[in-house]
Length: 279
Image: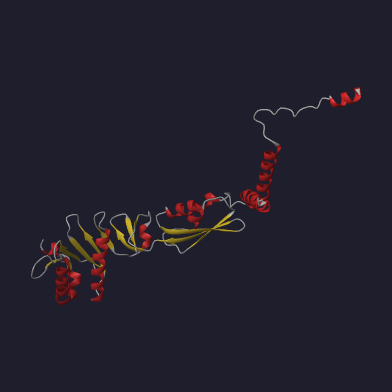
């Protein structure tokens, strides 16, 4: 009887109290399940491939640099190519020798190009590497059209350049004019030279003075004053008079003034021995 009472009176612990803020096990399972579902949807294979690609891409510049460093050499020879009138092949090679010993891969060819093109006679330079240790520079010189003023030359492209040895250009027309009017002088000179050539008359040069007056020089040394106005008309009048009356006596003519309206004035060369005859 006592045992039955003890069994009936045995203490059955109640459900422990819950802490504030705690959640039940069912919501926790739901949260972890959702996270698992989300991770299950991640394309792990693609992420892995992407990571590998990024790693390899990061290695390429480093690997390229290491490869170039291993292969790099120094310039040990220079070759200069071209047809030269004003320049000397030896001088050009000496100019290029400053890059001997420089890196084959890292040397900036644009710097070499600019350096060669800074020389007065050089119109353009093309620079290239030749494996394993060579540097080739192809030079194109200015092609002179005429002498310009006292110290310069004009190229066939109309560029003015000033070499120290301009006379090596040989017999060329001599043009003169103010700074900034080169094109105008070239244009007028070309027109007159073509008209003279059609008549079999040699053209030596033309000058434009500061005040705008033109003076023509023929190949035989005769000077022709054309003035500032109606230059083409005066030139045509000169051609007519010269062809009809003066060409046969050209060796006696010193200067022709074509600035007159209806004709030209002629200055004759002094007669040989004239001073003796007058004494």
